[in-house]
Amino acid sequence: MNGTELGGGSIRIHDRNIQKDVFRVIGLSDEEAASKFGFLLEAFNYGPPPHGGIALGLDRVCALLTGSDSIREVIAFPKTASGGDPLTGAPTPITPAQRKESGIDGAPKTGPQVG
Image (cartoon, rainbow, N blue to C red; front, side):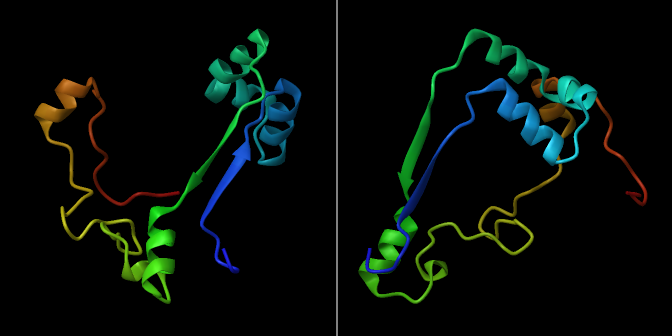
């Protein structure tokens, strides 16, 4: 509206060959794509219809209505540059009880991480 982007949308990939091409462009081999996204490639065998969506950004509308220079001034639950939430302190470590409840059984890595 008047040069301000209020939302966005897209049509999703609904063709197996296009999806495979995208995987190649981002550097995935056919084997790696099948290993990581085999469920998706399998779904293409059933002929997903063209589909997409559009959504308005309420924060953008609020910034426009209030005359704010930035959406940062109207975001209800802002995040830090690293993705942390100053209101809740998230992200936080997962407790052993939460790990058990969620079925996550891998132990957290300790020490310096390489790569």
